[in-house]
Image: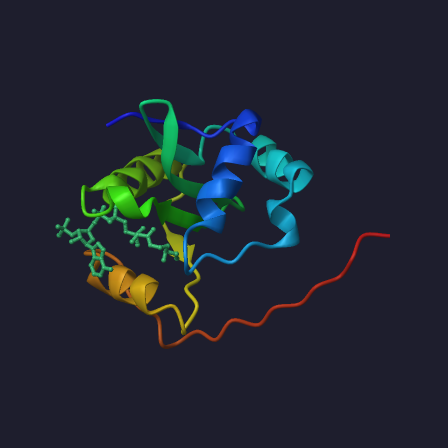
Length: 141
Ligand SMILES: CC(C)(COP(=O)(O)OP(=O)(O)OC[C@H]1O[C@@H](n2cnc3c(N)ncnc32)[C@H](O)[C@@H]1OP(=O)(O)O)[C@@H](O)C(=O)NCCC(=O)NCCS
C-alpha cells in the first residue's frame, strides 16, 4: 500500500480531493498556511495514498500530548472498498502509539450518514453517548 506522510507540497491536490468528496467540510484551517502549520506541529503523522502519481486518499492526524485526533479521512470515490481507509487508520494509530498516544478521537457530523455508518462499523471504535462536544472560536489579535 503506497502510504506516505503528507507534505506541504500536497496541499493543492489534497484540497481537490476534499472538494470533490461529499461529506467533507472545508474550513479556514484548510488554507495553505494553517495546513503547513498543522503538519509542522504533528510531523510525519498525517498520511496519504498515492496511485500512479495521483493522491486518492488522505487522513489528517494530530495529537495534544494526551489524545490523538483524526480529521479529513477521505478516499476518492473510484478507489473505495479497497481497504485504503483501513490502511491509513492502521498506520496512523501505529504512529500515534509509538509516540505514547494510545487513545484517539474523531468528530463525525450527525448528518453525514456515510461517515456515521463507516465509523459505526469500525471494530475497536466506540460511539460515545456520554460526551457532548462544546466548541468556541477566538481570533488571534
Ligand atoms: C468513509 C470512507 C473514508 C471509507 O473509505 P474506504 O477506503 O472505502 O474504506 P475501506 O475500504 O478501508 O473499508 C474499511 C472497512 O470499513 C467498511 N466500510 C467502508 N465503508 C463503509 C461504510 N460506508 N459503511 C460501513 N462500513 C464501511 C469496509 O467494509 C471495511 O470493513 P472490513 O475491513 O471489515 O471489510 C470513504 O467512503 C469516504 O471517503 N467517504 C467520504 C468522506 C467521509 O465521509 N469521511 C469520513 C469523515 S469523518
